Image (tube, rainbow, N blue to C red; front, side):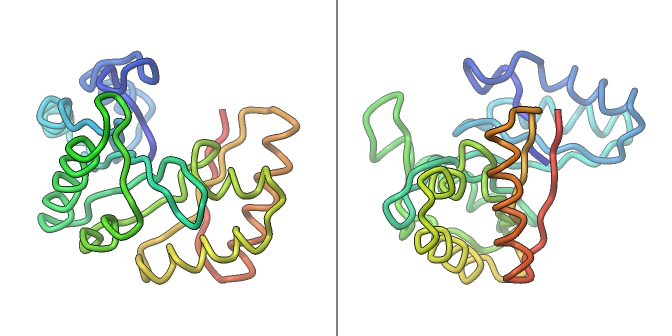
Length: 189
C-alpha cells in the first residue's frame, strides 16, 4: 500500500511496470503506487497491472502540516471521486508553494478527502515526527484529527527497517492505534 516508482525523484528507483512485474512474481493480488506529489506513472502502472491481472491501487504521498507537525501522508483513491480529489490535492500542493516544495494545509486536505483512504505515513509522517518529539498531546490530537477527517478510512502505518529507534516508534504507534481502535498495518524491510 506504499510503493514509489521513478516518478518519486530520489525516493523510487523502479519503473511502474517493473513494480507490477515484481508484485506478480511474488504472487501479490494488488499493489498501490504512491509517488510523492506525482501521478505521472499511474497510466503505465494501471495498464501493466491489467495485463498481469493485478489490482492497481492509485495513491499518492502528500506533504501536510497538522497541528504544528509536518510530514507525508499516504492517500489511496477508493473511487473515482477519490481519484479526482487526489488530483486536485496534488495541483493545490504544487500551485500554492515554491517550486520543489509542494505542501498542503490540513484545511485543504479536509476539502478533498471524500473517496480517499489515509495512511499515517510511516517514518516520514507527521505522527512519527510527534512520536520522536515525545509529544503525547500532539500525537493524540493528530490521530483524532485524521480519524475524524477519514472516518473508517484511516490506518496507522508502522514501518520497521530493523533500526532500534524505529522499533520504539513502531511500538508507540501501535499503542496509539490500539487505544483508539484504529487499524494499523505493518511494513517491514
